[in-house]
Amino acid sequence: MDYQPRRSVLFMPVTNARAAEKARSLPCDSIILDMEDAVAVGEKAAARNAAQDEIKKGGFGARELIIRINGLDSEWAEDDAASFKHWPDAILIPKISTADDVIAAEALLAKNGAPDHVRLWVMIETPLAILNIAAIVAEAGEGRRLAALVAGTNDLAKELGLALGEDRSAMRTALQMVLLGARAGGLAAIDGVYNDLQDGDGFARQCAEGARFGFDGKTLLHPGQIDAANTAFSPSTDQVAHARRVVKKWAEAEAAGKGVATLDGKMIEALHMEQARAIIAIAEKTA
Image (cartoon, rainbow, N blue to C red; front, side, top):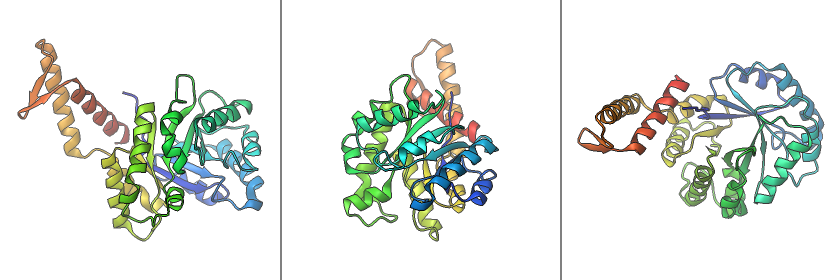
């Protein structure tokens, strides 16, 4: 089973060369070099040059490299896309709200010569995006670039008038809609950031919540958050051991010509075997 780990997705300002260099040695799964919120208005051109320098330099290893450009409705998006001579693994577009936005993002990348392997990630961070989630993920059809939905929880909280902290009960519906949309479209689902960099315990609990919800990983604001995210979004030793037992029991049942099996008094069907294989694949890829 092919699995791309995205347990820890670290935001880094693209204009901070020292931070980008450090990112090459960090145990995160993915790195987002940010040309949007992390870059002042007067530094947008410098950010484009910095992004090209970092991509050309390479050295990110197995880490997935994503560049967040400015929003499609901004004065910078066109120039951002036109600046790419070297391309990352994916381009992240903020504030996507409609299916037409996804189509426009795809067209922007195609117009500027993005190779076929360059994926499209989108930020789901407006109420309209949540309401349009089904139409948005419908643009993830065969031959299209859309690969991941990222929950933009800070912007969502602002738009909804919520105080965003560890307790996200008021945002649960929106988070579940992001996850439902991602799964319906066969996309990765990345949970939002945790703002309190001093609250390690709260961050770990929110990571565990995101994993229970079903997210693949979490966007991070600081390298100190990587280990907790990797732990939360990785299967435990007990889960992996149980998954291996499920696969073994299923194989024995198949060899005996049976369509079901039992393990510890519980029924095992094909769907349980598929879940078990997924757990094993994640464990092997992130070991």
